[in-house]
Length: 148
Image 1 (cartoon, rainbow, N blue to C red):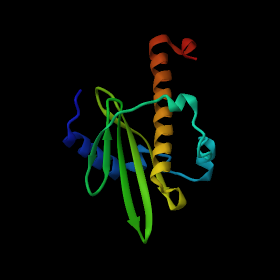
Image 2 (tube, rainbow, N blue to C red; image 1 turned 120 degrees about the vertical axis):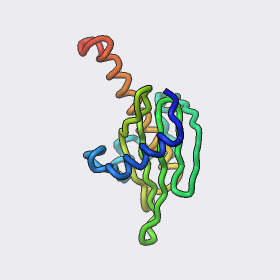
Image 3 (tube, rainbow, N blue to C red; image 1 turned 90 degrees about the vertical axis):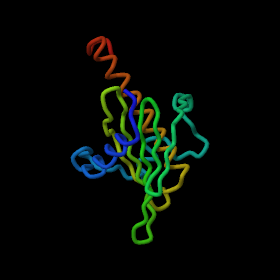
Image 4 (cartoon, rainbow, N blue to C red; image 1 turned 30 degrees about the vertical axis):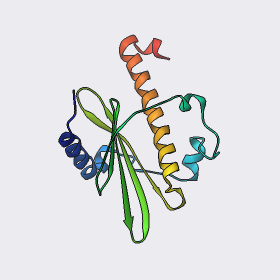
């Protein structure tokens, strides 16, 4: 299914209005613990599996946000400034032929709000979502005993 820009915009508005219901754990704050858990503390350290992932996105930019679209994902990067604090929110939706489904949202603020960190954390989440989808697809095709 080809997703048109109007549909993607409607989904974005629906997600933003319903984040507490769609993401019960809420928006993940990028902090030292998260960076440690995802092995992102070392400036030059890049996981070999993670490094091999290449993605091409169509980029749509408005004053409100940047939208990245490819055949697997739709990503919204939303910069905000509240009380002189800059925050970057990122929402990731998995794209299937039938629908978009919001998978995760995260926020970068303070010393963690750099374009490099936003993109590194985004890549890590995309990698995890892709791995989870591979396992789920294997479960659907082979049953639980052969997926692991």
